[in-house]
Length: 319
Image (tube, rainbow, N blue to C red; front, side):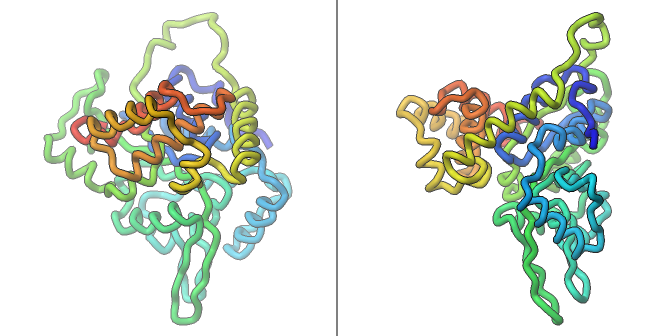
């Protein structure tokens, strides 16, 4: 079945690169930018650059969807799920619930994408229940009648505005939010939740493409998907899992840094006040960037690009 193509999105090359890295390593992604910059349009195109479901994955997805009362159509057999619950959804709707616990959105997105548009608009408690499945790839629901564990190995893609009105830092709009309003808005996302989102990319307003004419069409999802598939194959061969799922010990085995790269990252760690979890996620992202380029070792420029994709770790900056 045809999926939306990234070639339909003009400009936003930095964010497209973030999407490619997210797809290649199974990383979670948060896009921050003013209204109308294409955040939702970009997120909807992530499934088009992900490899099709393998048979074992397709069986798992079909079983979970059947238990959840949403059986899959035959034409969707190898298509990765893309779930986009509304921000008014309850915690039970997101992680599952009911007298007899049934799968929630995190499980219905198993082996696929969970898209949360306008992330800070979700209830704080609803967001906090995402921490378990993001960390473990499964969710346990305890009720009087039964305690059930459902798979929930999904890729989170979310969007947010830079402030309540959406126009902080936007040269094309006028922000009317006070400093405290902006702080409170950002505080809706806890540090532990942000730490579990590997990639944090800005989506600025771009108008240069409006003046371009007759240039080459933007790169297609198929072209990007070929690079993503090659990176997936490399990771599975090397470590039997995608980079986003590596623990600290495995990261030391498969993404060990040379002394110069370790010193470079240590300086960035101090300058941007990264948390320990963020430190290791930067290395995971850099490992994926190196895999996309077919390099055996992580280089300094891989780390530099990875740091650019942890924008919200810079506590003193507007995201």
